Image 1 (cartoon, rainbow, N blue to C red):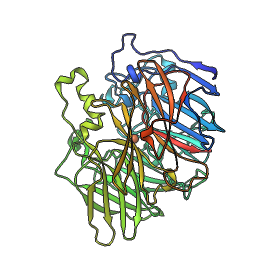
Image 2 (image 1 turned 135 degrees about the horizontal axis):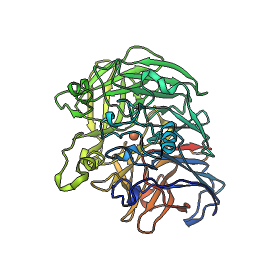
Image 3 (image 1 turned 60 degrees about the vertical axis):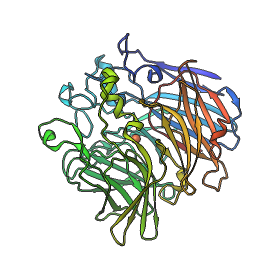
Image 4 (image 1 turned 90 degrees about the vertical axis):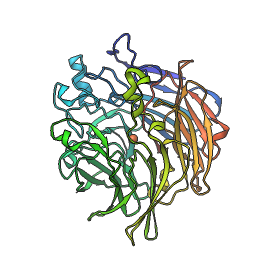
Amino acid sequence: MVVRTVKSYANQLPADDDHPYRTGAWRPQLTEYDADDLDVIEGRIPEDLAGSYLRNTENPLLPAIGRYHPFDGDGMLHAIRFADGRASYRNRMIQTRGLADELAAGAPLWAGIIESPAKSLRDGWGARGRMKDASSTDVTVHAGRALTSFYQCGELYAHDPETLEGAGPLPWSAGFGGFGVSAHPKLDETTGELLVFGYGTKPPYFSLGVLDRNGVLVREQPVALPGARLPHDIAFTENFAIIGDFPLFWDPDLLAKGVHRPRWYPQMPTRFGVVPRQGGEPRWFEAAPTYVLHFINAYEDGDTIVVDGYFQTEPMPVPDPADGPWAGLKKLVDVASVGARPHRWRLDLATGKVREERLFDEISEFPSINGRVGGRRHRYAWTMTAKPGWFLFAGLRRLDLETGTVQRFEWPTDVFASETAMAPRIGARAEDDGYAITFVSDIRRDVSECHVFDARDIAAGPIARIALPERISSGTHACWMPA
Ligand SMILES: [Fe+2]
């Protein structure tokens, strides 16, 4: 491995930090590297694997004002690039306006999501306002740019997808729909279009946008919701965008007083809005109450729209006092507590009715598909299981949605993975012909590796284990960029 240190940052977290999401697997990394010819520890890198796996990370350089939530952390982008049986790695802090201001001030300026925005020292970004836009939630590659985004809405930050050099925010994104842009822009690899959305506390509460294959925002459409909602993801088909209106949202009475308290309203239905991608009025469908953090995919089947995603049986779990000072936080970021399971909704365009069913009993989340079938009929998903009580990925699953069968892989104790992306093999025709790629952090050995699996046989374990220069922090979303 040939490693060049690009830049190191000072750690401005408390010296005796005991926050569970700034220590252990979530310990932030302070150094940026350019590393080439990475060492292969086990197996070999396939010659027919070409492209990059990119992963975003909450990597705080400074604490937030007040209580810290893992999703408050500053963004760090990681990428491993594969070509000709070799791999190289880059990582960079995402140079947001908020991070620049805090580094200049030498102190946090914004309160995070579990504090009152009134505690922030200045205005900022976010669906509820007065938050730092950390751009640390998601990453999507579109029109030659890696775009990082923030779950509470903010600007879309552009980066060179190979060098990870920052090119600043897309100029239109701050004001998109009056809200900014949420995490989870959705790429249609067939058309090259990117669907974006934003949401906030003022009518119409939601906006949908379309970027053409050249990265130009060509359409912006408000979608009226009954009030302020907390959507996190959307799905799409060839002709439609599917948005969720879930009965988990900021209590409207408290919101009117400036208090942002999410509340679960189990007597209300879930509503799915089916919005023509070419523009037009949404059609609404009612389903059983739940909250969907992430969709798997959606497609059209005659008059039916099939939507696969994660149904939560308990979207607002009650904190367990036995969990101590982090009790509230623990339940909220634990996919087991919320009971997230793969689910299928069939929206019948002819009758307006919804049929829904659970697809698998085992709890998992953070699904990936072969991007080529985005918005089209899919069969497989690669998805993560978590260490109970933690936002840490301990296992990988390959779900066959046609046969209902599951392949499983578990990492050893104290080795935690990332959202795993599916990389089609060069020349692949079949949907599952390729590789499943992830970064892992091994807490006991204090190292990180990239693990490459045969996407058809994850149970066999990684076919290549590749060393990274330093242990990286756990993070949220990842994507695959074909060469
Ligand atoms: Fe997400």
